[in-house]
Length: 118
Image (tube, rainbow, N blue to C red):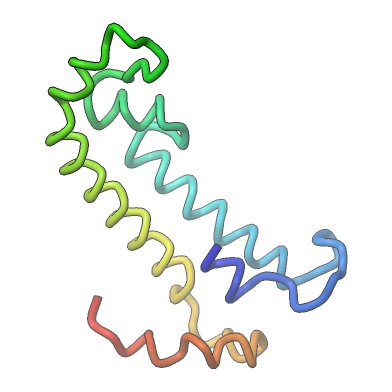
């Protein structure tokens, strides 16, 4: 959402006709490709298999105890996943800041963030 907020279309043009939307799509595709490369996919099932070594069956009441036993590891790994996703979004937004002037005034909302230490 943050990438689309900065790079998304400024009007109700169709996405195919909007250079801003095309720019947002390119950045989002790179972001999601990097995420999938890091975590094995986009779905909870794929990420769980990569990060936990197994996909959890959330629909099976008989496996509640198994999920509860994994809860500390799930919480720890979730913060790693969220941190990486945030890092990828920041990179997607700030990778080419010299061309951001065409996205003003939306860029004005974010330009000071570039100076922050992440």
